[in-house]
Length: 321
Image (cartoon, rainbow, N blue to C red; front, side, top):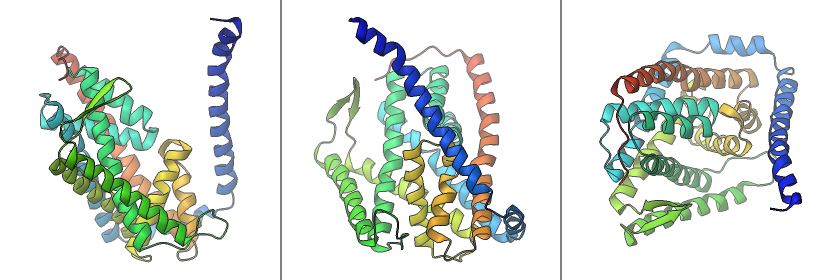
């Protein structure tokens, strides 16, 4: 390897890391600057004023959403034929999802799955297939729910945004076509194996794809229902769901852990003309408490229990099929 190549390899990781932390610092500065313009006493009053019945309804939907998401890895268990129990698989998925929401997908959704599943005896190729199928299930539902919302219930976007209502309809149609393409692939190429970066993924059948679709669409709809209840129905459900879907992608693009500030910024930009800012932020902070922080506490305890169980079992790794 040339001296120039060696030099590049020595400074490039540091430059990339510095750019990443610089980006996070910029986001933090913008959040602090924006936070100074908010009357936090009004926001706290809005949280205290939330009726108990709406909090309970939102909490019930959040619990249903987590329970449903926790079954995603069971689909991967069916495809890979590994022998971990249903409760164990759901527990690992729940823990990974809670940490994913709060710490980002690489730490939560990926690292925790590899850590816990490997401790419980699964081989890396099996874990990769389970993880990949779970992520596919999640985003397949997103394509359909977002595509439907953008096509049939397009929201009014701020004038300084790069896309208008018509552009949103086109985007929705593209998302629906992508989901349809996946269903057609499963209908016509069932059992075919595709290799992605050295990992083999077998195309599931159409019944499995439809099950993925039903589970994920329901889960995204439940998430929208949580915020809708916390907003006490002041905004139509379809509009709340559409804004949540925009915020979800914005959080993925920015790579900010927990979408901190991104979720709030998108909702304020799109709904502040319909809901007072203090009430809107109060509902979103309650949403973070119910859907992010409370599950994180439970997941932390679950992680400690799972680690202790794995140490006791000392299960040897099984080769993936």
